[in-house]
Image (cartoon, rainbow, N blue to C red; front, side, top):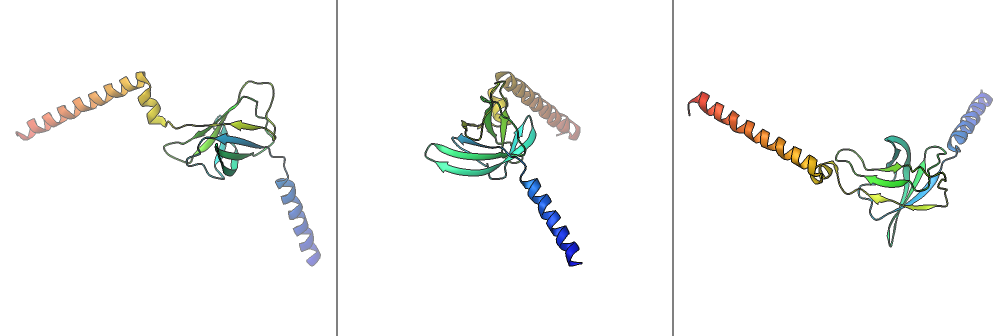
Length: 157
């Protein structure tokens, strides 16, 4: 009985070690700022989770962010690394792969950018969207005035 338990324990340990020793790629990214980014924050490519932040270190020129990709994944040189800070949900790092034929290695340190503008900021700074928003607000205001007038007429006040 003890022998069977030991064999089972050894097998489980071997499996766990094999799973944890899968090749994972680490990269270092330097950001000016990392608001709301933490260790364990997601790293995504095209919206798909491909890794996580494994470390943050404050330096004179900003913050070193170490990421661990969940599998051996080649990131093209020249790719962009951005911190996305959504209105709802946790901040994450978004990797926009470049078309370069060469790839980053664990020895490379790359620069990233912090995306300070949220969704509403993007809408308000885009002149076409700003005009559409203004028109929608004006229509809502007109509708509220008409509603108030019809309410007033129906009550006789």
